[in-house]
Image (cartoon, rainbow, N blue to C red; front, top):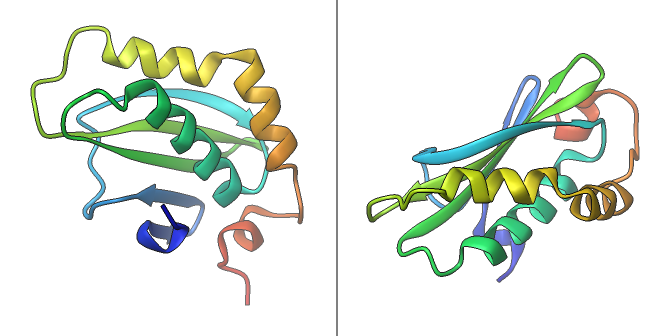
Length: 124
């Protein structure tokens, strides 16, 4: 699946990666990560979340990253076309809190510039 098929919504201090618009969180979890390239990070999180939930009928991933206190507040989850099974939010939280995932994501999305505005494309 190419990146061109994903909507990348940029706001002043946030970036949202979603397949369908408007972005909707029927289920989700949050974590905080150090500052890194938000687009690379969003794609990495989306991939791992998809791998964990690909058998969930009607699932469409959404990842939102928001600059907060020198780091990134990450909200991951998405829209679900069917009833959400119990434990789905906990499964997303497991993906977000996995030390191996976090190390890999940060290695791949290491900080490339300074300032969140440059990272999300809002700089002049």
